[in-house]
Length: 265
Image 1 (cartoon, rainbow, N blue to C red):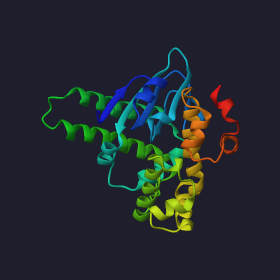
Image 2: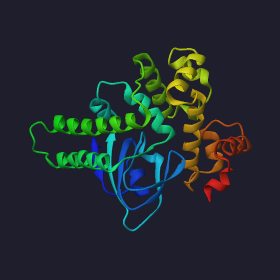
Image 3: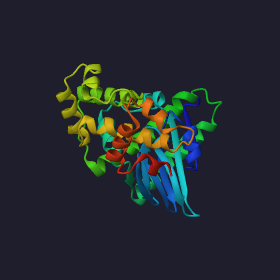
C-alpha cells in the first residue's frame, strides 16, 4: 500500500479502490456534481475539499472540460506530515460539516503548485531522502489547507485535551464502532469522560453534539451499503444490530429522509 497517490480523476470506482486513504482535492477546470459525506455539491474551478475517508466521495456528473487534482494519503502518513498544531482537529470537524472550500485564484494556484510538487516528489524514487522529502511536500500542502480554512472560518485552535478527545472519538467512528454501538455512553466510557463532557466538547468545536456524528457516520455507511446490490436488507439489519427490518427502515427514513428501497434504486 503506497503512502501517497496522486490522481487526475475522481471516478467512483477509483474512490472505492482508495479505501483507507484521506482525500485532498482541487477542481482545476469545468464543473462536476459530486456527493461528499452524503450531501451533493456542485464543484467549480477553485473549489477544494478534504475527505477523511475516500469512500465518502462519489462522482455524479461532470462537464467535458472537468479537471481535478487529487492527493490520496494513508492516515499514518498524514499524521506524520501534519504540523504541530491543533488547528487541524477543529478544521477537520468543520470540514465534515461542509467539506468544500472555495478558493480565490491566488489560493488555487498556490494549492495546485503544492499538489503538483507532491506528484514530482513521488517520481524521485532514487532520492536519498525520499521519505523525508515526500513528508515535507505533503506538509506544505496541509499547511496551505490550514491557511485557507482559517481565512474562511477563523484561526481559533482546539486545546490539546479537546483535540485528543475529538480525535479519539472520530477514530472510534472510523473504525466502525457505530455498527454495534450508537449510544453516547459507550463512546464516553471508551474515552474515559462523561457523556455530557464528550457531547459538549464535540459541539463546541464542530457545531453539533456527539450523537449527531454517531448517526451521521451510521447513515453514511448504511447509504453506501444500500447501493451494493449484493448486500440484502436483512443482512444490513443484522450488520447494524437493528431488532428488525422495520426498525432499520425507520432509522434510515429518519436519518436520510427516504426509505432503504428508495436509496437502493
